[in-house]
Each structure stands twice: as structure tokens, then as C-alpha cells.
Image (cartoon, one colour):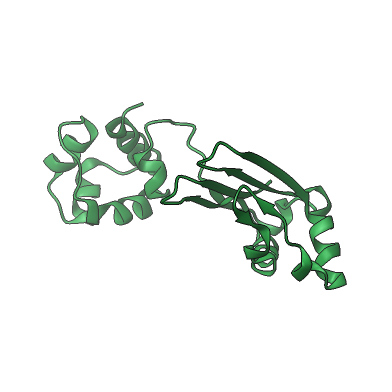
Length: 166
């Protein structure tokens, strides 16, 4: 699915005509038609307004894959998994070729935090010191319903680190 096709699909799903979208965004109906036919693209400053109008995100609008999954999502409280079933995944791929994958069950992290020993949790993974992770903030995010890839960093040295809640 092209971006233009996605724009048209989202517009139709919300029951708008091209004229209505044009009026709400302050552009011409011809401009909306060009976007949907992949002749041109909207000004980048319009993307947040278009996403809001279509009830979606800018990421989803621009993703040609119709099965787009945002890296981070908010889960409603009634749909959240129990912390007992959650895992914090930490992956480090160092520029030197080291590959480290750590899967920490959330109950284990909470046990360390509650015992006060988390500050002594100093594991060095491919040049990445786990004591640099703010586990308190991660737990607050989980409490708010945040799931997915929380951190993705590529350093100037070529190290690649991801932290994800699943």
C-alpha cells in the first residue's frame, strides 16, 4: 500500500470527502487529490494535523506497510498484562562484535529494587554498564501502560543497544 493509498483509506474510513479534508487543513481539494494519487506529498508541517484528523499517528500515515506497529504503545489498564508475565529485554551489539541478550523478568527486577540491591546490579555487557539503566523510570512507564521498544541507541563507536518491555 502506498502512502497516497493510505491517505485515501484513512480519509474514507473517517467519512470525509477530499473537499472536507481540504477545508479543514486550509489547502485545495486538488492538493488532497495529489497526495492520494502519489503525485505530491503534503507539507511536513501538516502531517500532525492530518494524523489527528484521520485518528491515527504520523508514523502510521507514513508507513507504507498497512500492518504498521508503533515501537512503543500505550495499553489501557484493563488490557495490560500482569507484571508477572512481563520481561525487560536488553540487547547489546557492540562494534567489536559482542552480542549480549538479557531477558529480565519484571518480578526479578522488582525484587532487586525492593531489596535495595539494584544499585549494586553492575553487569557490564559489551561495554554497556547496566547500572546506567533507570529501572525506577522503566517501572513507572510500565505502570502507565507503556509497552514496546523504550530505547534504541546507536553510539558513535558503532554500539547498538535496545531496551524493550514485552
